[in-house]
Length: 202
Image 1 (spheres, one colour):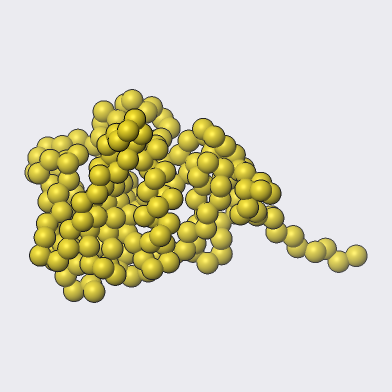
Image 2 (cartoon, one colour):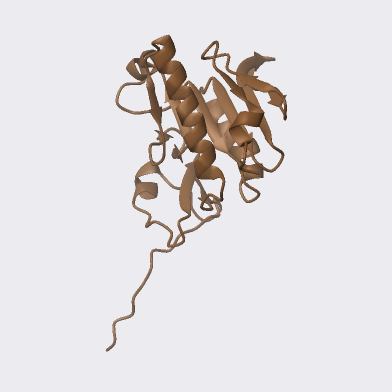
């Protein structure tokens, strides 16, 4: 009798299955450089990044590191595959394109990274809707104080800050276009010029 190779059956419908964090961690990686993310037990497929994702990440990272050093600001900067995760309500596991975690927040969280001070996502046509809606609102629910959405299609930087509106958390949104400079409210004084970030990339 010939052995038949079987694959792990993966369900993306919460009507069929909602994943715990432990089940999620046991899933095999996709074969096309995509990766899975988990929100409240719901499984999402995230496509691999498109250019100029890497260049944007390099420039933004350099800007943030230079500011931290110049201002003697502590804290860590993380990149994939460093996650934010929690086992509350089935399980949630997200991989930001970049995030900043202050020493104070790290000490309060302990060993499990359940949030970040600032999260950065670099949008592409394939993931823009997910990043702006489902993923962004999940970051808000997890206590992320500031979210940067970098969009090379519209050549904009959108900075969102967490506020309370009607007893519920909400995003206060500021959008910066060509000729403007984005500003962080969490790291006061850190500025990113839209033209400099996207120069030669789009």
